[in-house]
Amino acid sequence: MQVPFTETEFLDILAAYNEALWPAAAALWLLSLAAVFRLFTRGSRTHRELSAVLAAHWAWSAVAYHAAFFTRINPAAWLFAGLFLTQAGLFIWFGIVRGQLRFSTGRSGRHVLAALLAAYGLAYPILTLAQGLEYPRLPLFGVPCPTAIFTAGLLLAADNPALNLLVVPVLWSLIATSAAVLFDVRADFMLLPAAVLLVAFTIAERTARRHPHRVAHD
Image 1 (cartoon, rainbow, N blue to C red):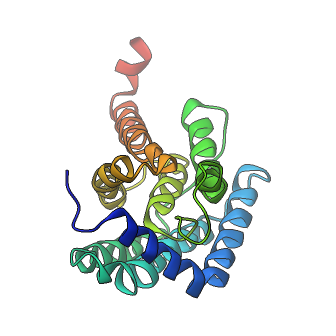
Image 2 (cartoon, rainbow, N blue to C red):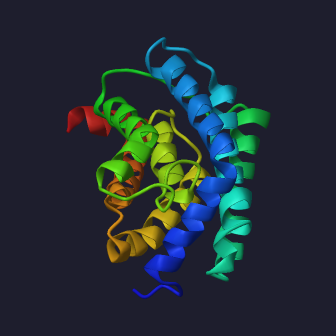
C-alpha cells in the first residue's frame, strides 16, 4: 500500500511535532504512567480517571498531531483527526458521563496481556530509540500509534467494553501498519497483534457472558 508522503517528509513532521510540543507529550506520558500504576499495582478502581486519560490521548493526537502537523503532508489527516476526536468523545460519553467503562485487574490471560500492552505503549519512546532512530526525527509519545497500542491494553483491562470503543483503534491499527512496514518503524509492528488480541478477547468475553453454560461445558 502506497502513502502520499515520503519517509523524509514523515520524519520531518515528527521532528517538528517533537520540537514544538515535547513538554506536553512528556506530561501526557507521566499522567498515563500514574494512571496505569494505580490500576495495575494498587488495584485502584479509578474508572473515570482512566477514561479521561484515554480521552485526552485521542483528543491530543487528533488536534496536536493530525490537525496541527500531519495535515501538511497528508490531506487524509483531517479525516483521521475527526475519527480521533470521535474516539475521544466516546471515552467521555461511555467512561465519564455514563460510567459504563469499568476496569479490573487479575491474573487471567486478558489481564496479563492488558498489562503488557499498556507497558508497551508507555515504553514506546524507548523502543523507537533502541531501533536506532535519532531524536527528534522519530515517533515518541502522544502520536497515534502508541496511543492505539496503549488504548488496546487498557480496553483489554475493561470489563465488557462497548463495541463502539473498539472501532477506531482497530481501524487505525490496520491503516498505520502499512506505513510502519514501509518505513520500518518496528515499534509499530505491535499495532496489528494488539488489535487482533483486543477483538478476540472482547468476542470471547461477550460469548462467555451470553452462553455461560455452553462455555463451562466446553
